[in-house]
Length: 499
Image (tube, rainbow, N blue to C red):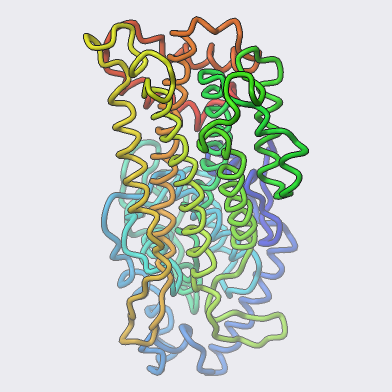
């Protein structure tokens, strides 16, 4: 892990982003980026001094863009913008989302297209490095003129207003700054707009969901392997020559992982040994899991572009032109979030079907509901119910948010993305999906225990069984496994031992 992450608006990676967001690695703007920031600021000041009409600098906002602002009111305009737009509602974003927003906005401003003053950008970076986290309500963004309400709550702290968490306490923004040895800035022309025009809320939530989804996908592949061990699955369906006749790289990668992880198993079978072929939830797993990995790869590429993009309006070009456009519109992220929602839902959907095969004696040939004493005991019967409830909830959440649009600002902003809603839905779906996959692992582990087959599974499966058993012991009599499901799901997202 790097000791310091450098920001220039061009090369921030997801791993660097995570290191700052989750591991508190410090960051700083590069010298070259500071030069670009200074140059763009000079162009804004020239426009103000010359009395030019520039959107958001010497005019109102949205439908009020035709209202010219007197030069003496330019600074008040920016403060008014933050105060009037900070009207988010609902539960605050988690700290890691807030840190992600701060980092992404700083990186976007470091590109030098936004006209921010260097001291304002530096304070934004200082919030990150000092651990001052604005309190930002999670609801209220349409995702079109950027994430206006969330980013306005973030920006208020820079002027000593709003609220922030610092060293475990929620403080007024000004107090949090003073406690960390910092001073608020006095906004000048364009700066309020530069701070809140952007897609950083949806992108921050999206990057966290993407990073967690990557682990969910690997966990789905690992759970599949344990179920193959428990049900004596037919490994022939994963043969590389078979998969290569339809050469989607992602499905070949899934099959290769399964073959590698089950290489020395004495439980899996070959075509015709016990049965000719398995049900789809096992036999078609490379195709289904692989399609979800395709969605993951597409979304990863979209967010890599977005996290190094200028999402401001207007944009100050190196030529000196200041152009109004739609760089703030969240549609690229919104559609990507909706796409990955489908991929994540399918990892959970097919996992729930494998859970059903494990607990249903008519399908598995195992003890009913994987209990030690069927009838007297219900075993893991209700685990399948809970998995079904979560995948059904995911089906509702998978409805695309990006196809919705409600006009705003007196119909000036007449198409919006709902990208932040899509990102929030995606992350909830990821958390639902990892719980379903944890349930599959628990059921498969219980089946292997009942079959007394621990010595027959692959070496990789034995390692994973030992890891699972450290949190979820074999079920010998009926007991609630609710806490164990939560513990295992959390570990799948945070522990690298099983991977």
